[in-house]
Length: 447
Image (cartoon, rainbow, N blue to C red; front, side, top):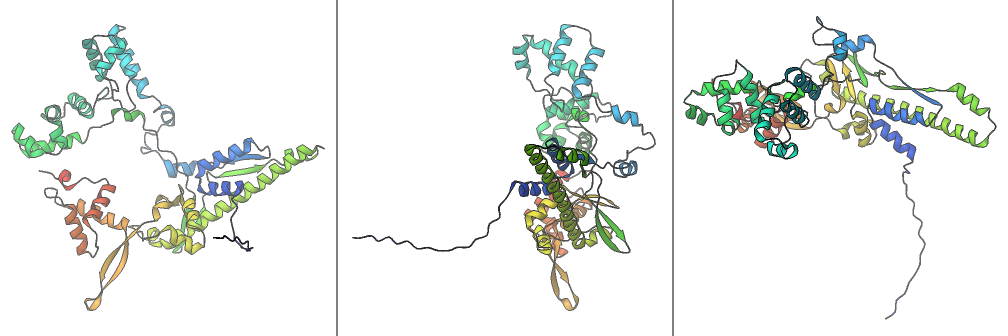
């Protein structure tokens, strides 16, 4: 048996994209939001003496429009600066020093305070506390009781049940049986077994309904009031303007970084007769030019994508109910002859400003479902309806339902079918859950 080896030559032509570091960074810049872009450029400026980064700040009018205080009558700018800077831990410590004498029991209360989480819950058990402190169990119980009497109501709770009980205990307006139901029958209550509760306590279902309504006014996170920072100012990337029934899209500019070239420094460096210095300054000048081109290209791409979105979703900007039609990233990419990933990066964490609110650009991309539409002569045709519109219809059906006999997901599916929208029970469930709407059992009322 013999083996024969032969060698041949073939010429093959292929095209590859070389991802240089600058190209990768340009792609990253497109994906960044305004805050990330400013931070990225400031880091670049640290290594490039020719670059100074400035940010155009919003005018007072823009601040008032986009982030005006909810109560303008009693608005106090000084209070806005200092009103919400106290942490939960600092507030509890202040209360302890103001209300308790300097005793060993106060030391235990202070020690327990260090084991509160950001929501105000106790993160250590009494048995663990006993091992760590060497204190008697009765002393730790007294210390915890004192801690739980502080503000906000519910502080120091070891679980949700105790948190709700602590709030109910302090409230003189709480329903008579509320504390007892929470203490003795929390599992039945949270499982919505109201008929069993009504029978056990020999009360009408309306009494359990009243307790449920009351408990919904309580908070599961008492300490979160100290963590609720004021919503950050959202700087829109694009402004949608309407004029003579026409839409136009322009860059918002506000919040965008401005690159200022240090001309004097550049000229001084060119005067130095040193090869290394000249090479360094030429490299930094090239980097400056690349950054300017990348920023311009970024802005142009975002405007192109934004304009295409607005053109496809015209009804959203003109009609009062702001309907959305089904639209995908691929459609916009094909329309602009760019890659789908470019569209995705262009809308990532970017916002439109309209005369009726600020909207995330990504929210305009929705999936669609087929809807049967009746025509004349008993004919029907099919059109695509967006998932957002289906969700809106589900919300309306649930809002208008009989609360004594709420609609099940299957009944909602049947009601939508009457409107020509074919949707399965599972899909209804998925949409309902995405809207944070409880099940029909948990929506049921008895009064």
